[in-house]
Length: 196
Image (cartoon, rainbow, N blue to C red; front, side, top):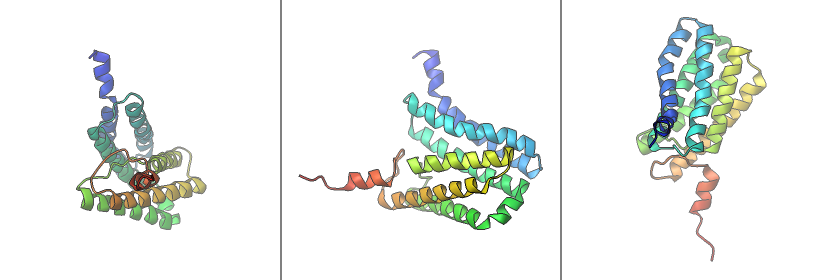
């Protein structure tokens, strides 16, 4: 294996690890009111969330470890981003408390169900959860760079809650932990008995 191939093989996991490593710094910047530093670190962290999965799928570098690292990095980035909103823009949470509680509640319920069922994060990476992640990332990035358009907030929350509900259904349906489940439709289709 060439040195370049060996290096590329570790890029997706390195990007996920960088997001994990960025979480404490983001938390510190948010807690100390350093919004500009928080934003300058948050935006690249959000972009690596898109890049790691794309690189892994495009070059056939997916792995169980990579899926787990990505899920941990996503969870940490989500928590620290919400903490950043709370610390730096508390008015957003006050004005949109119902949407925030619905989003957080559905996400916490999915994580709790996954730990009860599998003893770990689900790491399904469904199409809906990818769309939700992208929308949430865009919404949070736009908030800290330009200000928040409420329509974007409600679109991101709606898609995210739907994705979390789909993952709850998948946790109920799938007895064993597995990664890269496209979605509920495909799981149900595969469970149907073949017609003669």
